[in-house]
Length: 499
Image (cartoon, rainbow, N blue to C red; front, side):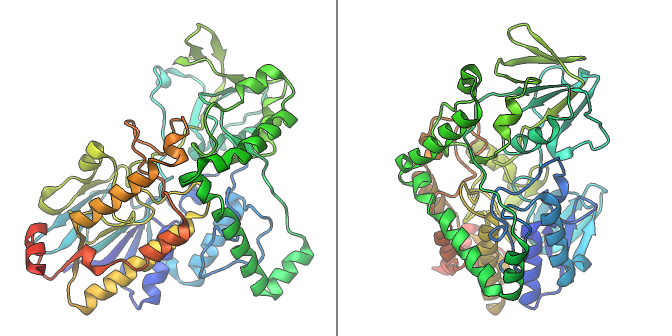
């Protein structure tokens, strides 16, 4: 017998939404493993200065627990974390969480139809179903730079911000110009004595249409929840309109390129610096960035954008390929996360000894609607392969997956079939369609390398379509795409039995 019917890995947005939905479906036999010492996922881990969401808060929130009184359009990290904790407390989800539980391996036993879940303390939990909700932006990447361990100053990743390190009057080097860097760089520039920002490729940056809500507006939202829901709907559809440019007609994105160049020209008057900061790829090929303070921070006398390649890190700073030495007291890595391979750091052994990450390393991460993988019965993922977005809220995507998983498990329980596994055929057909649609998208044709893609260029991260289309299909998964069995057989045997 299993120790628990359901194990959820991760207590962030998607893990807590899964727990809420299990409760709503009448299920109470579940546990949530969280590797940190508090809930909140990426919004608990990322505490760097200026950390905020780049999706409007009314959209980037639970559909079942809307907050009418967000302080501003784009919520910052403290407000988002407080919201997540409030929702967990309101629905009693904290009672199911076990903190400081880092999952290291999952192993499926065909005879018992049970997953063995091992944590870094050597303990093993038995679960019938495992739902991995660790999130695509959960494990930071530390770049492989020669000499990185030789630096004698303070060096850390933005996702592991050292609040004990005082940056006042320090020479600070920032490696990376992505979504985190454009938020924390403007926050630290006034403190430091020198700021060197190492840029490999210049990103597209648009003005951030930020605004704080007035007390009158907040009162209207609180007293009339319909108004808040209408704003959520309007923000959703406004964002969704951009999707057609990303995956079907990239030329429609030229308007955003014009806006980006106009924004750059308005804030950077120096032609040499403006040339450095001008992207050389199509808008949308990399993640869309929004900021009103990024360019002014780089325009300061104390700031320099460094485009020469890094040769190595030495004890006192960073040596460039051109022989120049950049002195630094502190190096901050804004180098992103392991997004192309879900569940990093967890060994997953499925049916017949199949190694999930070994298979993904050969062909790139694949799943059926980002949640199920053939050969790994009763294992589900939230925000797995090809569920990421370039235009809207991933909370919406996770909730769609959750609804589909719940409906599928209810069907399995009604039929008395505790083992659920997607067929190879359904998975292959789905991923062939995804890759075909991606091949015409700006992510593949826009002339850039991005964290959306593997080293060989396969995009395993982005959903190439509308989110409402994903929701429609993911919430109503066809039972014919799955093997539902009482005693596990091989996929071939199950297929024959079905015939």
